[in-house]
Length: 167
Image (tube, rainbow, N blue to C red; front, side, top):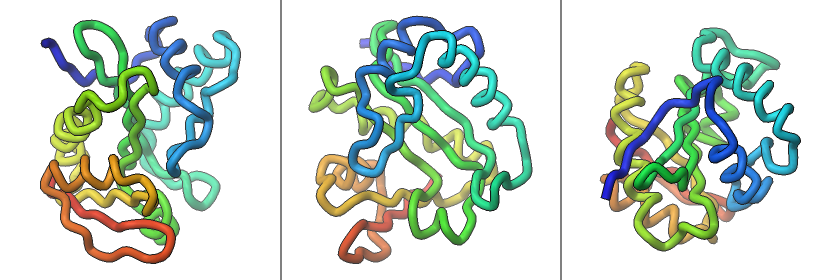
């Protein structure tokens, strides 16, 4: 089985678009703002997202530089991950460094674990020694994924778990 993680490219096509339409707009704290948009809007978003990975400043008081990656299994896109290059105080409470989603038809196959494992070295490339993942309490699958990748629960409140993972 060929499992690879690829960075977003402005040349990404309909296979990624179709995956993003399958992943819900908001689920378990992950926000997929590309769900429900047209293909033309998606292509414009790719240009903005690629630029977001190169910026260095905070935008709108909270938007930090962020890289987007696609998980492919045998050439088929099954997941998406976002890696924030650094955190604000707000992102330390809600969001963390990493957000990810697996398309619904591919869940339960271990792809979330593989995605996170492949993503962590990219954190190191951005100067992140320890990545924070915030996971809603009712998302047991993502908590397991983080722990299986060496995550340590720092704390939990009535909304989410705060899990740190070495990059």
